[in-house]
Image (cartoon, rainbow, N blue to C red; front, side, top):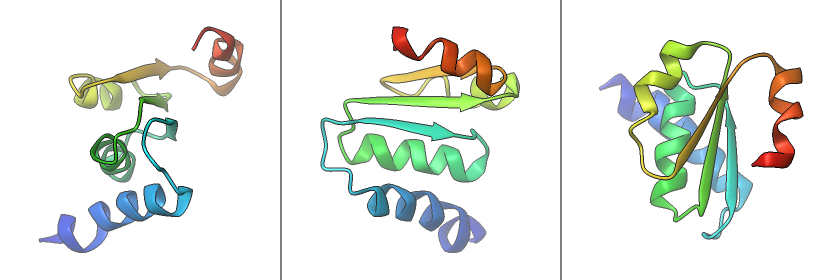
Length: 86
């Protein structure tokens, strides 16, 4: 029940506040429970591409099977270095 009253609405609201209209690219920083719900919400709102960034590989492993999701694991400097290739 906690997921329906805390984690999911937080991730969903983040996508709504971002004003996602569909067909856009979304970046989610943090692949914990709230980040995972934000990823799922972005996919439900027809994001063209979802990029997930986290420093912990096991978190990324949990959501790597989601459709149209690119994953980056590492420190922020590493991620920013790769941004031109996204």
